[in-house]
Length: 392
Image 1: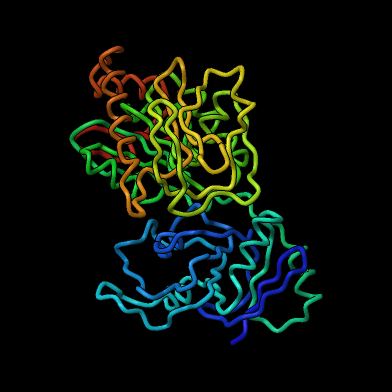
Image 2 (image 1 turned 60 degrees about the vertical axis):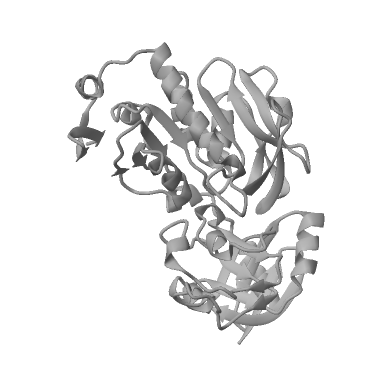
């Protein structure tokens, strides 16, 4: 079956369809990873996007359920040079084609992905429509123009209810803006008592969970589309240690008075060099984002730049000068080969412990009882004999 990808500038690519049938509109982006197509497919940060893989052979090692970064894929289309129909890998449970069919995602293969990537790099990301229908090109362009890009991606991918991954050490509230499962894995393997909350959780609701620290997850889209999140962060800044990743980094910047802007074509892949300004060391990082913190907006805030991108000098890390809070634009939980950046989770936990020493807190049971008495919370679930609270 034939598939077509039409860009908003009129560029048309015709190839072979795989996966589901139909039509889908999204922002056309590219990822430079050589491996990891399953992690790309299941990363919630790609919600609303048609993803092009620059590596030419995709699908050769199939799909293994254990490698998913979320419960399901959220991308709006998948573009590859060559799609391997029969995977060769003892761990493979099913094929790439089967996965896309299961979740209604259209794939296209056999097109010049190098040309497409160069076009995006030159002109910037743009809207596109991927279709298996045979409608005339003029009608397809009208459909593309009439369909706006999504702005509610975060609410689509975030958990709808509070849940816990119990541990014996620090309690971390993970605010899910589209979190990859790798973040939860890194926290739980360090013994953290993790409580995952929806993206629209208020500052007061988080206080009732009596956290030792707060982690702001990655997620899709423009950080300015979730202003309630920046408001929540601003209210809690200085009260609890905070660590932001990717979208969480951008929201932390907005909450601290800085600004963000859209990149021409974003950073997506597993080989982006990032320099630590304090040590001078360069880390090879995994990234997936289309927005960045504006460098000139840092002036006049209490933020300090800690990391920069060695390719384009954009901001990759921030810390607050007065409060225990820091963030990075890249993904320390991802391991596209090196494990360079996993130390950031240890730094976060060290920050939490230092904060406890400098500001002794009452026992958690008393904290929860005081927060419940002051608010209108109701018990949501229990973990290790402690009550967690959410709004009625």
